[in-house]
Length: 411
Image (cartoon, rainbow, N blue to C red; front, side):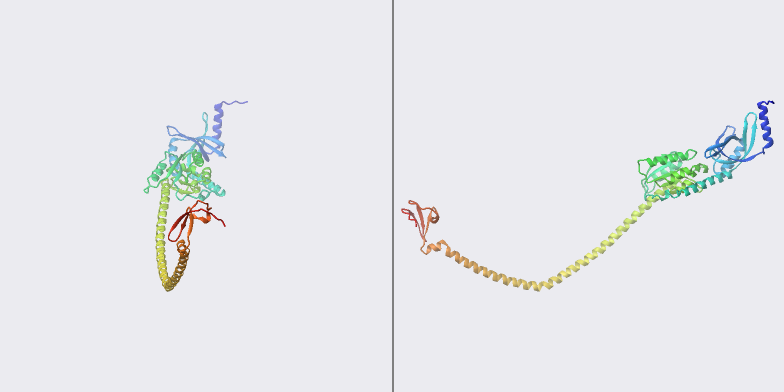
């Protein structure tokens, strides 16, 4: 049996590869790792995934001179630097070294593939959201007329967040807003998880917010890739509060913008949107107050005129009624006068008769006719027991006689 040394085996592999492989291949791969050493050489790990499962992996390198040229062209075309997490179309040469093994050397990159791939994934996400009826889900929520209490998702060190707060707090009309920051990463592989975590914290917060705002400053286009993901877009679409975005980009809307309630270009544009809404409501209130005051004055003037008219009518009618009844009242007054005079005469006659009767029954009148009145202790003897020895008082018309009883005869 023939034997080979390890060097001989590796050399055989190298010879066979060089004899049977083309000088280079165009290969689609995702960059899972990327690092640049001090000399400017770029070292990559390329992978192919299926449902996040790695099906293939190989290391590659871009020599410093080539890397400077290719990375600049790629960023200028795509708006993003070469970095981990993106798919790229590479022109590769396959190398096999007896000591270092199999590796790939990058000769060229087609940035148009990355642009197309990004666009394809974006359209795929939009179609999925549309099929699940989520594109207008957040838009269907009612945004308060005057949203004053807002939750803000942003990086606390982002210039965009600072611009937003400055614009909001120093508005020329001195409107007051309450904001609470929920910090999150706004770019990179962890951004989606971080933003979704912030959304959950807002949902579980005891504070009742009017709306949620997602803002960040400007940056490379690729830094916005997280806002094109299905996971983040779905979380925004299903969020129970209206979401306003101000991501700070100049290209077409991200998918997050599409599903948000209201999309604005920059953080300061979001602040201006809130301020303008407040100003519009303020002007609307002023207009309502002006119209109410005007209507009140018009109605008051109308009612005053009606009151004046009714007062004149009442005064005129009262005078007519009084004039029409004057004659009747005079006749009734005269009739009452005659009746009262006849009544007085009758009463006078009655009084005279009674006076005569009283005179007739007066004790003085009776005594003047020769009668006398016998009293015992000032009281009539008719009601008392009379005994011998009692002193009786006998009153006549012109004298009073005191006598003592010597004999009592009862009939």
